[in-house]
Length: 433
Ligand code: UDX
Image (tube, rainbow, N blue to C red; front, side, top):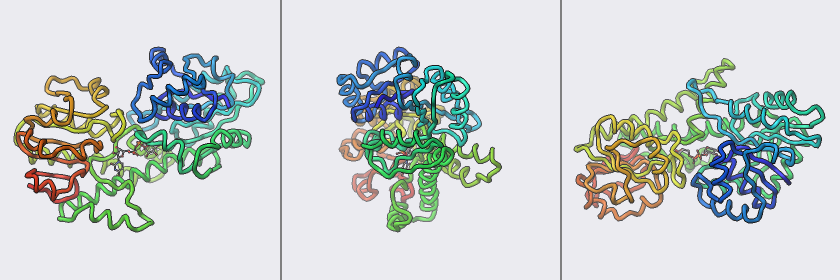
């Protein structure tokens, strides 16, 4: 098939590369010429494991094309995917300007044979109907178009595998022809097929993300109970998670969720609910608890730090990505800088992105994890990168001025840390002081 992706972020570029790898002819449209030039050279711009290799391979095979021109791609394509951002507005509502702008630019290039325009961007219920109305209004009179909602469930850091080995493929459309074409395209993808209407497909994505965010906030809430009552959150959640109805996955407490999806999608669902006069107190609590995880973490720093040099390991919102959007590190670093502390930070891949936002002289970007902890009065762990799990902790202890570790991801065992002579304060477990 010949297909087009508009937008080349974590969803657009990964999915485009995967479908090109299956043998499809794939166009990717962007609006920044310098970025399109880099993509053409095989530079993915973002960091995602395996993506560079997949990109280079499919460019070489002449199946993957990058352009800024809609006319080059749209009229050739059977399916056009919209994969642009829907960032939150100040009031929490999803900003749909990019999505609607893209739809407007697609319209004049639609052809007489059917084109399916499928939205992968996370959009509020009713948006695809608006896209359909706009396309019908602006397309050439004889052109045929059908709209579908095909939400994406990939996680950054494991995006390629998540795309190929999906749990489910959701296709929402009022057009049987669109469903048929999308089913055909997704044939090599694993997972159950869910065929539904537009509104349900749109709501499936928000529901999935809100439930996952809820699991994390619930685990964090229980960690607050554990810290004040003397219980151990890992024991509590391990035992609770053995109940198959609950499960242990996505219940890791710490410094809360970040990234480009959970924070924005929970807020957007609150906003959708408010527009429909639905009581959204439960959703608001998910968001509030997430903020409390940061406050709780910073309180531990406040109460235990003796000195003014703090090392930080992990800046990305999760491991295996360079993405720092809504990462816990943003709030933690900003607060500690305001307090006048000297920060020595290290992240395996996210430092370039962090540097674009934080250039204060009290902040030093370190070459590696050991350099960051040298002469520090505390080490804060914000992202559970694998390379932090098996560092030489004796070496870390000898490099630090004061052996205090505040772990926002519970990556070490308290008993081991005690033996090594650390003061170790983790989440929902009794501190080693
Ligand atoms: C998420 C969804 O998982 C994915 O299905 C959807 O398509 C996009 O949003 P992503 O944001 O890439 O994916 O990463 P995810 O692994 O879900 O983690 C999100 C945040 O939650 C991270 O900050 C992570 O550290 C945090 N998290 C996750 C926890 O704090 N505890 C957990 O148990 C799990």
